[in-house]
Length: 83
Image 1: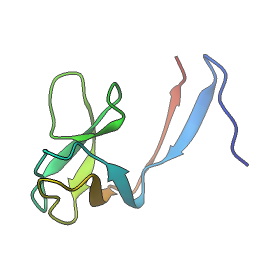
Image 2: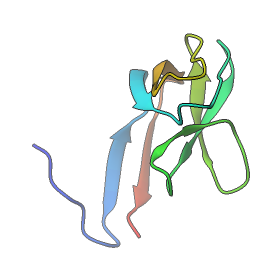
Image 3: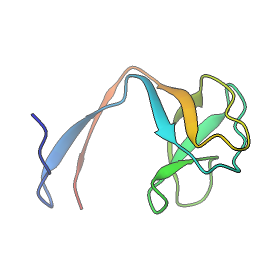
């Protein structure tokens, strides 16, 4: 069952697996490169200040591609409060 979490409520998210996520078309990501989540743009980016590291690219994502091929993250679960 999916629902929105209330502010201050803890949530559990999946961090295990392979996912297809959006990325900026001009961003080029090499296989094995670390990737981060840009919460402002709601897409994958290369690591940088203010971005959230999420894993590594399983495949190359070239210029013009709008979806990043699958991303892998280590075997663990994370809980954090919603702000």
